[in-house]
Structures are given as structure tokens and as C-alpha cells.
Image 1: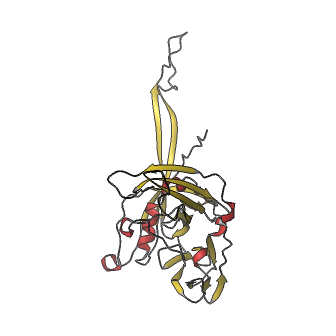
Image 2: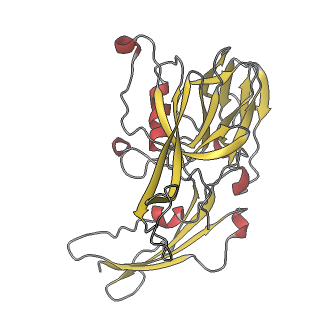
Image 3: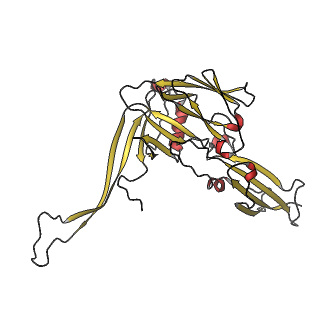
Length: 327
């Protein structure tokens, strides 16, 4: 008999694999469409509801265990396959693939950044996100950092410290010998402008830092409403010239920053692209971590052939009103 329907139990949790909850977060029953030969259930958005992305310059691992238990039934409501139920176990991050990657692409299982270059202010340490399951060690200028995976979701994504003034990072497989990725570190001396650190959630679901080294311009856009009021005094039928007829209310403003990366290599195109695509972006500003939104909506990809020296200018908007109106 043909497949008729499936039942899906979906478990989503944090901590160790052994901490799986006894009751699934979702129970889904779906029947096959008559003209189809299979049944498709999209669980990505359901899982994403349990990924709570938050950042306060603390670089926490935002991952969850996901177990899908699927039972198959035929038209007589009997088990459809001999391997019934099927059990699927995943580690989920808040990442994404591109259309050209095809269906359900598996993203990087080692270094969780796309570029092969990192730019840091001179004498400033950095962070490199890696996926602990797929990395045995990280070597920075011949100094090894061994990576261990305890199985807990709070360390599946680890942020390896990059010492100040480092030059080369090498990421190795779990065998400690197979080189997976080499990253060059450029230490930028910027004597004129103040570099600002932008942190965003990249396509792998990891926090990635991007410094803007050159000129930063700050501006404020004010919004308000007005109404026309009656200023005549009832007792004397007169009005005071120091009292206006039009009164402002609901006054507030939003602050914008226009920032420049300084000269970067061509492979930073993908980093800038992922910044533009990110739903979660922060800036380290005046000693605080503050949320911002990329206000630039158009990205012109630059190359050394066409543009010689590559500098990106990006507009940001603070993700809050200047006057505190949180209620």
C-alpha cells in the first residue's frame, strides 16, 4: 500500500543531548496529497522560535538540539516502512543558505566565517567563531588552542580568542592534522579616526565582528506632530503673545551613523553582504553594546579590478528612539 500520512514529534532543547524533554514541543500529523508520492514538513521556522538571539559583548553559543521522530502509515493506518519510526537528530543555529546552495544545505562545520581575512585595530584582541564538533585545534601564529566538545549546546559554537597583533590563524579538523581553513589577520594602525566594532549574526548563526576604521558621521532625524490650540483667556478674551498657537507633541528622534571600513580585500564582499542580510546587529559605542539596523539597502559589490582600492560606506540607524519612550 501507498504512504498515506505521517506523524512528527519535534523536540527542541538546550543543554546536553540527554536533557531531551519528555514531551515534544510540536506534534504534527500530515496526510499525503493525492498527486504526490511523498510528504514534506518544514521545521525550520518552528525551530527558530526557540533560538533566542541576544548579545551584550558576551559571545554566547546560540544553538539548540533538535530531534524529529517520524512515524509513517499506509492507507490502512498500518506502519508503512520497516524502519518505523525514524529518528533524526540535529544541532540548530540561526543560519541560512543561499538559493544556489540547493535544498537543506549543510553550512560550515569548522570556522564560522566566510572571509579569509580579519581586520583588527592594532593592539586589539579579537574573536573567531568555530563549530566545536568539527574542529580539533586552532593554531594562531604557531600557538595551538585545543578544542573540546562537551556535547552541551552552550559550547557548540566557541569563540576562540585572537591575541592582539596576531598574523595567521589555521583551523584544523578533529584529527588535528587536516588543515580546513587559513585566515590572515591584518592589524590596522588608525591614528586619526576612532574604529568602531560592529557585531552581527552571520549566515552560520554565529556572532562575527567587523571593524569600521575610517570616517564616521553621526546625524539625527527628528520627528514630531503639532496641533493648533486655543490661547484666548476666557475671562478677558485676550491672549498672550508668548504662547504659541501651534504646539508640538510626540517629539522624538533617531540617530544615524555613516561609517567607512577603510581599505579591505575583495573577499570582504561576502562579509559585507552577510552584514546587510543580518536581522541582528550591534555596535560597541561609547562603552555600551547598542542595537543598530543597517539603513543601507543597496550594495554595490567592489573588486580590485574595477575599483582598485576597496572601501565600503554603510549607513546604520540605532534601533531605538533617542528619547526614552519604553513603557
